[in-house]
Every structure is written in structure tokens, then in C-alpha cells.
Image (cartoon, rainbow, N blue to C red):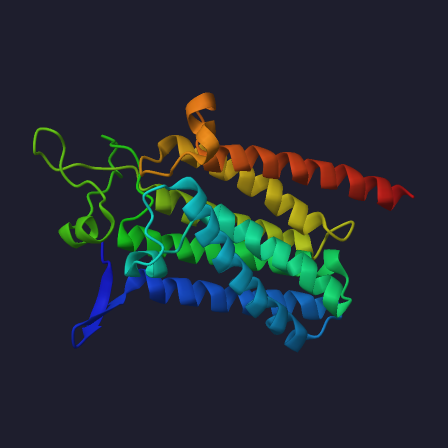
Amino acid sequence: MYPELFRIGDFPVNTYGVLLAAALLLALVVAAKLAAREGLTQARIYDLGLWTIIGGLVGSKLLMILTDDTVDVFSFDFLRSGGVYYGGLLGGFFALVLLVRFYKLPFWKVADAFAPGVALGQAIGRQGCFAAGCDWGKPTALPWGVRFSELGHENTGVPIYGADGSDLYLHPTQAYESFTMLAVFAILIYLHSRKNFDGQVLIAYGIIYALVRFTIEFFRDDPRGDFLGLTTMTGLSTSQLISLAVAAGAVALLILRLRQKRK
């Protein structure tokens, strides 16, 4: 893969950083356009989006610290790392909840506008992970298995040789999630124009992504930490446990919204 696009002197311009920036920008643009359909002010959505991004960054770093005892919070690697996605998702969500209340905006309409943009941002952002070599998968003999570059190994520690010294091919779990979330983005855009109640798009995203992430985690092989020893106790990764909680929460919200709609 291609962890670096080019260098400016000795400073590398990383593919991951460029794609992450593009993901955040496009996610905001999509959210603003969908919010305009709901009669919301685009400028306010951009304002919300920027604060939500900050909340997401804080959340991703915090969950990274909680799940990995080896993290050095004062290192450059920690600063440039994307952190843990679920931490970012939850951090951004809670920031959105607080800001929507502060600005007195309709929460469900705003959330429905943001959900497709989040899915698109994931699709693009995971391509950045693919280019960098982070979040790698288990070894595979399948024809689409990927061998990462020496530079990827240096930057992220992605394994490139097997125990016998032969080239090692891995499940491209980053690409699995990227292409799946691109399809989810299309589904959510379609749903947004045909939804039966406010909140339906956000709830659909929560259920679908939780199922997608839970499944892909079985193919992941990078170290992901063990929050409070739950991974050791259950045999499931931290992200799988969060996926179960997110799916359950989304189903509960679905039931609540349907009851409110009937009333």
C-alpha cells in the first residue's frame, strides 16, 4: 500500500491524514445538504459538525487510552493516530446531543442529516487505514489477500512475513469496511428521502453499522486492547462488545420512536 503520498523536505504527507481530512469535509457537506432538506440552516450544521469532530477526536483518544495500556499519551505517534473509531463515534454523538440542546435544534432531524455523512466518512477514512496498513486482518490464502509494504510495517507494525519468512497475505479488513459503508451510505441517502419518522436514518445506521463491525471484527488481527478484561472474559473484542450495546440501544430507540409515532 502507499502510506505516504509525498514529502515536503523531510516532512511526510501521509495518505491516512489526507483521506481522513477529505472524509471529515465530505461528511460535513453531506450533512449540511441533507439538513437543508429539513429546513435547517446549513451554517449552523457546519458549526455543529466542527464541534462534533472535536468531540469525536477526544472520544477516540480516550477509548484508545482505556483499551491499550501501552499507549504513550505524550508521544507523536499518539497525536497522529486516529484513535479508536467507536470512541470517536460515541464522543461525537454525545457532543452532538449537548450542542443540539444548546442551540435548541430538533435532535432527530439533525441526527438523520449527520448519519449518512458519517457512513461516507467511514468509507473514505477506512481507505486511509488501508493505505497506512493499520487495522489489519488475519492471514488468508484467499486471492484478494493483501501484502503490505515495508513502509507500512515500519509505520504501523502490520506483519508482512510469516513465521517461515515467506510473504504474508492478510484479509483487507479496512477495504471490507470501506466498501460496505459506501453501500450503507447509499442506503441511508435513499432512506432519508423516504423515512416514515424522524430518527429513522440514525437508528438504521446504528443497527447496520453495529452488525457490520461485529462481523468484520472476526477477521481483524491487529492488537485492540482489552477494556476491563472483558475481551478475556467473553472472547469478543472491545469493538464487538460495543457493537452489541449500540445495536441494543438502536433497537430500543426504534421501539421508542415507533411508539411515539403511533401516539
